[in-house]
Image 1 (cartoon, one colour):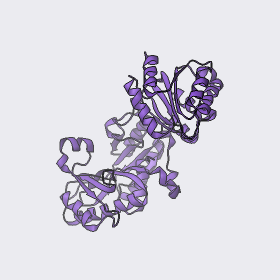
Image 2: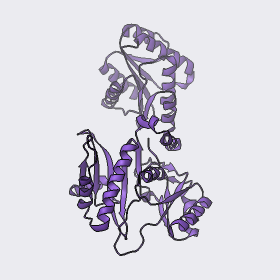
Image 3: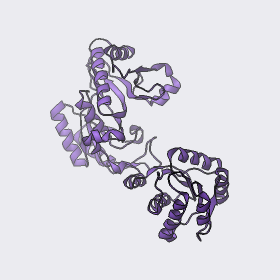
Length: 397
């Protein structure tokens, strides 16, 4: 589950991580009030107005701006709230901004120049261990750094039996070229950051940038946090941070009815039982010259009601030109699935306006094929994988 920057910072702060302080505002007046409150708390006269959407690269899309007085706070917040923010991580339509974070200016003058670093905590799937990834190149896309200057990316793997050790946190500070107060501050920052990651059951913490201020404080200026959905039962307060306005509405609807659905950009909808078969089906569609429009796993229960719900979800996508239903009948019998498909199409009537290829294989597959062929609907029936691929190719042409 993705959460907003301000929510991620709340989690970080609760574990002792120093953050750039800020207040959320939902309109221009609230933004001005927030700026006044921050001035009283911090003494800052300048403020950073940051769009709160689930996407990176907000600054490139005009979603992060500096305000040097209250008038600018009001103008900038008013312009950002309600806009469709387009970034490298959004669709062409962008995401609508419902709120902004009014944050303190932490790039103040002092004895030293501020410096930015990159830091993230995540699972290294190759080793099965958590790791801290960090770089001196803060503020840049880590993908760009990895491609152009890979020697500037460091990693620190954590042994799960002992956790993050003090010498590892010190090594992070050393590799970032820090000394004195900044070295000690970074060591504490890294230890607190990892504690936050582990105890919040997160799957990703990305802080870009981590800032060394002009007076050698270390703080999180940004926070991209992804929480593990499977652990939310342990964190009821984190579960309440979910903002469904930021999620695909079809995926939200699918979750409510217990379907595993991921929206994609293709033209062939697919309905499958089992994640492995779903992946193979998407490969099949690709080989047939199409593009998968979704990942949809109906699970082990493929009755008429569930099939109808799945079909309605697929047909919400206007780009879908055909639907491939690929079911393996193991525990669930193919004839029951076939009857479910027929009943669902009867219930939906004229809502089904695209060709449907049905491949049922497994228990009672022969009976299922008869039901599909004699249904009275213009189904394309198949029993083998290649046959289904040929039918997809046929209907797309």
